Length: 313
Image: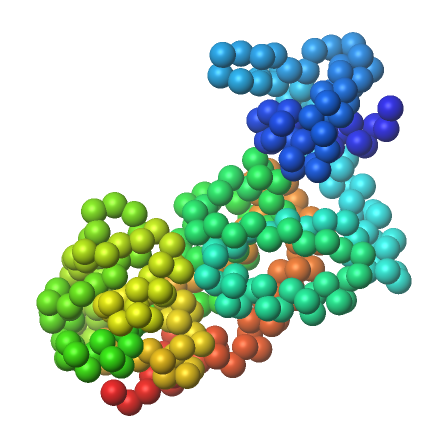
């Protein structure tokens, strides 16, 4: 029995919550996962999992083994990678989670350069606008936009951006360019998020603050839906300028109410709670952070320079 393979299987089963989920995470067959657990139980002379009405529950022995196995696996990874770094670069598999639109526009296009630096590395990109469970999905590092709900996770800030009122020139030509935030309720607003179709926006200018509840008949929980609606002239949206960075650069969309500011938005990298960030994940974030900082389009959409990409209406 390979001790480290058994450790990996037990860690995956506990974090994923079932044999089948662990098998998908490890790219193994479920019988192989069950066999590895059975061999480990025989080796340790103790039961590691109990089936309940709610699913698979680890025993106290399994939880104790898990904590030490996790440390051992992390130490093993760091030791092996340190040796490989002397001449061969990163190897193995890296699983990244990121919001769909930001990844499509700003992350996936640069992955080729990262992979070229590390020929022995494979990258899985899990795209989802929702904050998925990193441990259950076997994610090494996730890219998140906005406030971080879980303070137990290790986080690294990557970029700050601005929110803007955005629509196509054709939409504003038909419906007029708003001159004051109070005019927005009279416009067709595309709402980003789930719920009742209402979004809260706080506009500020020279000490003045105005809070609005924006109502929209069209709402979507995916940034791609917002983009499709806005780019087809269906309405305006109050969203991160990152979401429309290429179109802002090409003047396919324009911004309104530029004398006012909206709360900024942050991009962060987060790592699974309860474990040290892996070397592959840390090297990828180093790479991504440097690439994003060099991105001229994104640099023009930071809070320090929020208006440079806004064409004259």
